[in-house]
Length: 192
Image (tube, rainbow, N blue to C red; front, side):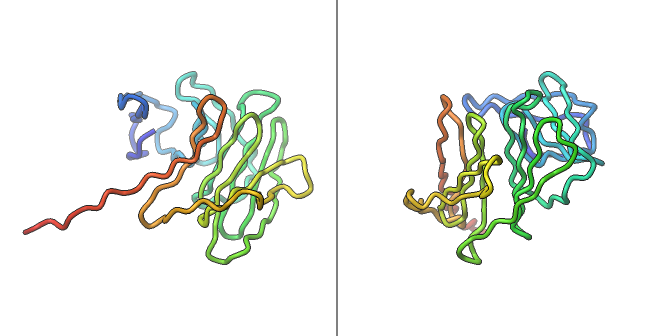
């Protein structure tokens, strides 16, 4: 879903594979903000947090006692199924909040980073497992069933990128996770 005014009934979507753009009239999303997505599902924030599928118009309301999210990194797996789980990573305090199907409250897990300037910048789910990437190119594995919920994968070499000049995001393709690094084009100064 493309950025735009939340004070509209119209929401604009882009198909990144062929560049097609679509406009939907979605009365239920008026004055609501999208704070994350996974597949066809949007994580929306209005008076409450909820998950919405704009194609099927299915809505799943999350429990009222959610933690306060300030632009979190969010990933979710299999909404509307018994395997559903949602994670929200916040930079300060460095916490991972999660909830699963039929749970009535959020659980929290504080995580540490080795370096003060490192932070989690992306998260993704694949086959019910969660992964996160730090700003210094470290990969973390997130398993909600373990005592150590977030574990850094030290056996994987750090991936090099520069967040000042590159945008980094995960993409799931054929049930495999791909890390995409897009370099910003250099813009020449405008002559006046």
